[in-house]
Amino acid sequence: GKFILEVSASTWFSAALVCYPPMTGGGWLLTWGSGYHGQLAQNQRQVIMIPEVVEYFQTVQLILKSIFTGPFHCAAITTEGELYTWG
Image 1 (spheres, one colour):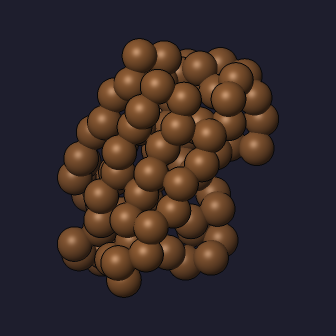
Image 2 (image 1 turned 120 degrees about the vertical axis):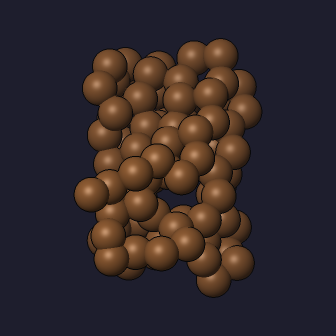
């Protein structure tokens, strides 16, 4: 089954990188907490109490290998070495 590769926590929200087989070396991003500054990347600016997959990366078929959280922003690095930021 799926397993957690990485977790990053900020003051108001958290993010986890979860590997879903048959992926290797990366996974999908899940976010939860306060999203009033867009840092959850969930297309809504509200509090989300249950971790939800960030659909953008699935839609464009980007697998992430690392995640970072700041006070009001996030950053992710793909398996191809691309950097994405939001919030």
